[in-house]
Length: 176
Image (cartoon, rainbow, N blue to C red; front, side):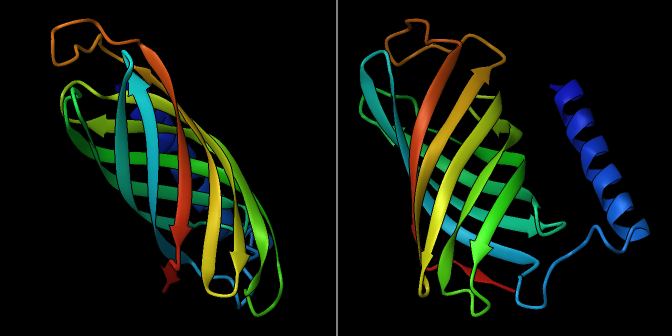
């Protein structure tokens, strides 16, 4: 886990330093927000038990193509141990959107880390697409999680060391 945090910190530091030293790298148009926020929901299964997650995310666009995303989440379901935590990821993105930012799409992909309760710490990989229609954002994608420790379900059975969650983003979101 320390290696992942160290690597993420180095990538963040290097990209920030490059953005400051190379003015052409930080190519955020005046209409592109530096910070945005959103709400998303995802679901998955563990030993045939379905769970849901709700996330509140903050996106920091270091450049027009690099986003450091941090999202607090809560996981809940029947016969599933509840968990809370933070997903942090560095996402490369490609965006096509009009100048008013009312019509377009964004595709994204990148690595990350999950820091969570109940031994749910994991390395992650995320990919997805979000469509912008007026002030509404609608999209989806997948997040792969590779857990650092063997987890147990509510009856004491081992859970898989890896899983894939599918998520939907439905939000008005916002920026500042």
